[in-house]
Image (cartoon, rainbow, N blue to C red; front, side, top):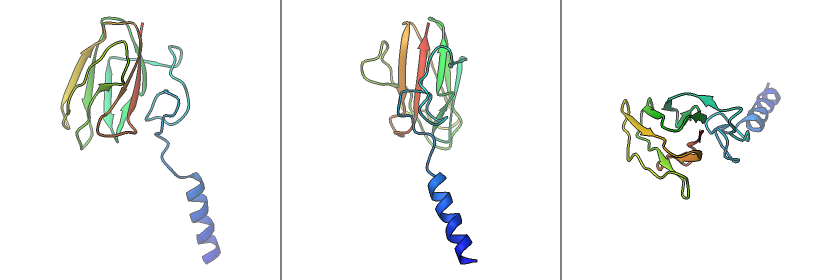
Length: 127
């Protein structure tokens, strides 16, 4: 009995860990190492912030599109561009059940993060 329990713990540890890490600038929240491209980006004008993740984590919009970010989580988040992006903005704290909207005016790839949660990343491809 004890042997099975130990094996279960070892398997859980080997498979565990958060899959929301985004090490290559991809989607974030969805796990992993897929690079966000126009071909795999979600075409949408809404982003949900829940479970300390942006959803989707990889999206595309046309120049001039307004995107609404909705905080569906139990804690505050921000929508903040990384340094050196084609556009620069910071929503400030967005409390639970609140929204923030931004109109993307410049074509390019814009990387976004939450100032409060280092695991939250979003890539927006503006075409």
